[in-house]
Length: 286
Image (cartoon, rainbow, N blue to C red; front, side):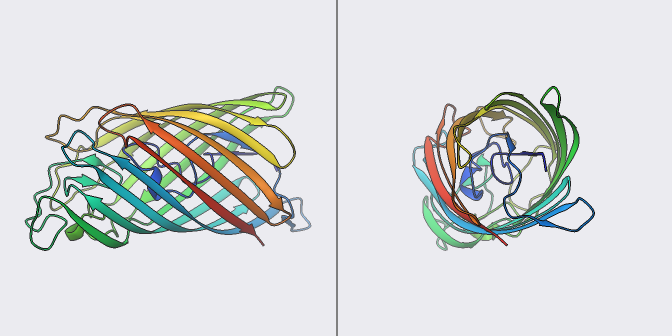
């Protein structure tokens, strides 16, 4: 099975989103799934479960540093050229209530802010926004080592908007990604369009465009490493923060037949992104 992945999970590409994902943002051609079941009709089926830890820190153009931590649960199903991913993050956010996971800096009109007293800073813990994403490998040319995929993503507003764990809005994203391989090296490019939902406390723009470019190097059958540059527009209205700009480096290692370990680090280059972050995840394939 020849599959294009968004470096490892749900590709929440901009706005300090990395803490909500199981793995870094990048695009790369994945190897055939080791141990995937065969239906007898030439279609591979893979079922994965995973968890991990993600951390980011940044001021986002404010006077206070905000840290975002998450321990996400991930479930993935691969069926032939189709992949479905679901991510449920358990989060802790500490800092300025005008910094929201997935958005960066906003104008938060919630009277309680993140703290119950309405203080200038506060901390909150709970379930964040649940993400589902489907990806279809629309075309692959094995001769020229080229292909592209199409994806659709829904971010449900399940994070407690009263505590600043989310904005309470449901967003829809459509994306297209392409790759070209040169031996063990694969270069990639992705672009996405997001239709933003409506929030009770935050004025959101109606749509966003994001893009990324990256490269993956397959060092061995078990070890891959790479980097990606991700950028996009500011999601909230009424703020002066710049567009998001982030560089992520990552590595993935298959530690055993059914286990895969991934790690990443990121650096932000604008007020729309965290200053730095990183994390790791462990996935098991049934």
